Amino acid sequence: MAQGMTTRLSQLNRSVAGKAVIVTGAASGMGRATAHLFADEGARVVVADLGEERVAKVVAEITAVHGANNVVGVVADVTSDADRRRVVDTCLSQFGVIDVLVNNAGISVGSSVFADDDEFSLAWDNTLAVNVSAQAHFIRLVVPHMRSAEIAGRIINIASTEAIVATPGLAAYTAAKHGVVGLTKSMATQLGRYGITVNAVCPGPINTNMTADIPTDAKAKYAHRKVPLKRYGEPEEVAHMTLNLAMPASSFVNGAVVVVDGGMTIQH
Ligand code: NAD
Image (tube, rainbow, N blue to C red):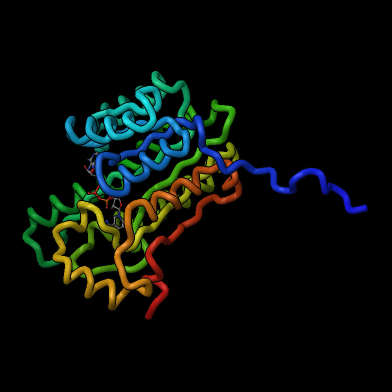
């Protein structure tokens, strides 16, 4: 007789229910979609972003669906050490643990090699501060709590296809996103022994505030030329990959750079 027929073979859990999750940049776009998705799947979420009203709006949206116990907002600038500590402290005081960090907050400003000195310096400094340095500092703040938690931690850094290929005039953004991948890989090698995984997600062109100023016909043309699926992606399509990396079942995925771009970067 075949063995094990009465028990299922798969053992790993796909549920993030009850997990305490910090999402930065959660008032808009992919961060908002990610915060909603985690809450929809039963997790408890810290919504961190700039702007009191913007944060309150997303907290209210999630509260309306899941109640007030599963979500808390923190108005925070990810480039501020004090603000980052408030985000972490709020997660601990509300939920008692930190299971997942989604480093999502980001900005995209031009940084042409031919720009004025001041303009280039400002773009360079701000872009690296928000898009990569803040991620590193946030990881350092959550790791001690994840190490002491019983359940292994999950860190997901949002990079970009600009971490793999490049666009003229976006030197700072491209450098920062390549930096996110390097940060991810280094942290993954160091934190693996504690059962903490660190992975990066590289979205392609996604319909969010970041791309809202691009005219619709320009987006359509770009997507037609560049993306095998012939369209921009939606924030939720990226959020599901982030959620996957946070699942207990993703326990052996570490240091991965996962592209969610409709096939853009594999096409000549
Ligand atoms: P978005 O503009 O809709 O959301 C970004 C959020 O980050 C905003 O709510 C903004 O307030 C927040 N943020 C910016 N600076 C911050 C700071 N200093 N402190 C706290 N919060 C801050 O854009 P999005 O497209 O959802 O961007 C999310 C992430 O995805 C970013 O890291 C971005 O670089 C990346 N990304 C976007 C695309 C795209 O096509 N939209 C593609 C690849 C990667």
